[in-house]
Length: 205
Image (cartoon, rainbow, N blue to C red; front, side, top):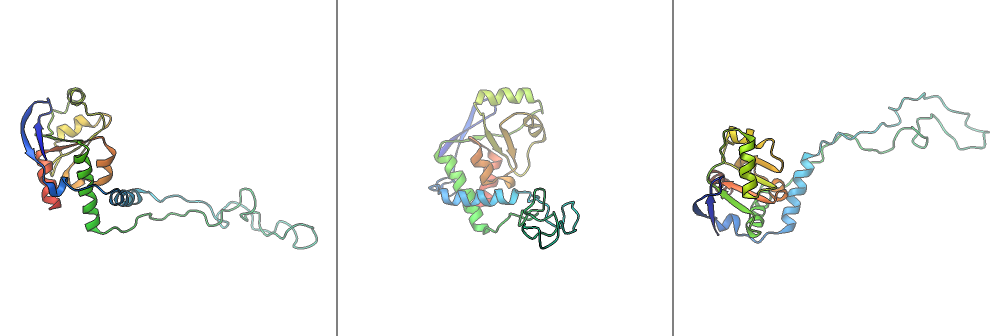
């Protein structure tokens, strides 16, 4: 697949051939689903917590005698059956992360790139550089028609561009090492710099 290489002002400066090994696979939804699920599980804080019977603020004395009341047998008011009592088998802080083989994670990234290529949602730009002014960059982004875009740069992101892009809604920028399936799929347009494309090819080959 051959794509035009453009500048941020929209002018074409050349073209580039996308590697079929990275961008020419037939996307598989099951692989993408597994990798995204793995990512989101790792991102969960896991700080959910409820109070158990031993943690609620209640006296532990027996609320009434065992026999002779005509009612059920009960101990303390902190029992789960009572209002404001402790919760039985509720959530506790834990990690939701699960394992996924490294080869499978790499395959997920390849299929995400291929899915974007197949949908025609990849743009290649010469470089992602800016003087740090949000207004100027916002005009360029609007002119290019990027409403929800992810920009993947080389090993490092240009400081001025990152500062300018910070306040533009729907625009994310990542170094090549941070490229991941979830962020690629959640944006409508995948924008690759020439340096970012080279870094991705070096990472995934």
